[in-house]
Structure formats: structure tokens, C-alpha cells
Image 1 (tube, rainbow, N blue to C red):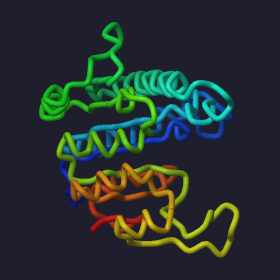
Image 2 (image 1 turned 120 degrees about the vertical axis):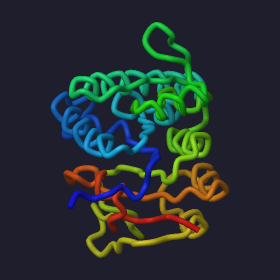
Image 3 (image 1 turned 90 degrees about the vertical axis):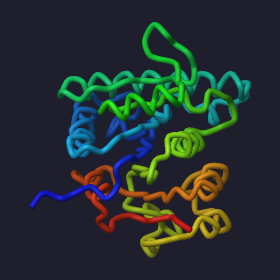
Image 4 (image 1 turned 180 degrees about the vertical axis):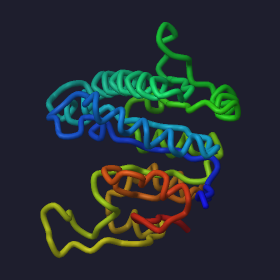
Length: 239
């Protein structure tokens, strides 16, 4: 029997780094098609999907600001980078038959729609995948904060954060072989222990909006479907 989704409206947070796969920078065109198929697998189950993508594979605003660039300018460039990633993912999704709209908080009407909450909800209700570009539209806010904000605005049942590791650990598992993965955390623990699940403002907003977060490994095929169907994988952050 086919699995039934546990969640019917989700917000998927993708890092820009996820799109580069094994490359040093940029976008891996083969991997982005693999990612699109994973998203389509969930979409055809009737799940309404909003996606927020970072831009770190192209430009990291905070890093450039630390290199003596004006932070507001650096963050604005980073927001534009998220639009590039969003258009690439849109093309990959539509190439396999999934209707998709890109809505950006930084207006670029020639290539995508401006972000309007009601419009985004309507697109999802019509069965379109909605990619939410441009971060929050403001400097000094990460795309984690944008994901938490959009999840709250669009009444998502869960925010699922795709990473390159299989959850949240008490130390960096790539550097510390004794690192222990948490199966479940509450928001305050994640904040007070500085576990870097998401930034503090994003965690606080999810806590106030009662939106659970699941952090999972995107590199394992089928994990998006497993999360949406309620299988226990990764780390759950909740009340």
C-alpha cells in the first residue's frame, strides 16, 4: 500500500550549498535534477510545498561583509543569488512536469512574481510548487529566518530543513567521531545549547508559531518523502 502523507503543507528549507553537490561553488545541473525528482515525489502525493533556498553556493553575504564589504550591500547580493538558485530549481521541476512559481521578496518582475502571501497560498492551493526567493527582502536576516517567516505566514504544518548530515549533533560529526545525534529537542534547548539548528531568530519564530522543525540528510534518496510521511528520521525540534 502506498504511504499517505502525514503533513499536507510543508516548508522545505534548502541551503545553497546543497545545489552545488561536490563542486566548490555554483550549481550541479545533474544533482538539481535529482533533487527535483525527490520534490516531485512528494508533490504528486498531493502535498502543498513551499521552498526557501539559500544563496551560499554563489555568494555568502555574511562572509563578504566580514571581509570589509558593507553588510547591507553584501546581504542584498546574497538575496539576488537566491533568485538565481530558485530559477534553476524551477526549470528543473518544470522539466519533469511539476508546475512551479517563483515569488521573490526582492522584486524582479521580468523573471519572477513579487512575494505576496495570498498569492503564494493561492498557488499552493492550485497545486503549484512555490519557491520563495529573496530571503526576507531585508539585510541582516538569514534564509533560515526567511524559512521560519514564510512557514508562519503560509500556515505550514512543518518546516523541514535539508542538510548534509542526518540530524543535529552535540558536536560537528565531521570533526568529532564521538558526536551524538539528538532524536528530539525542544526549541529552548536548541537555542541555549547553541546547536546551530537554525539561527536564534528563526528558532524563536518557529517556537512562537508552534511550527515543528525536522533536520535531515538530503543526500539520502527518498528522505523528503520519508519525512513527509512521518517516518522517524533526523532530529525533531518541537515544543
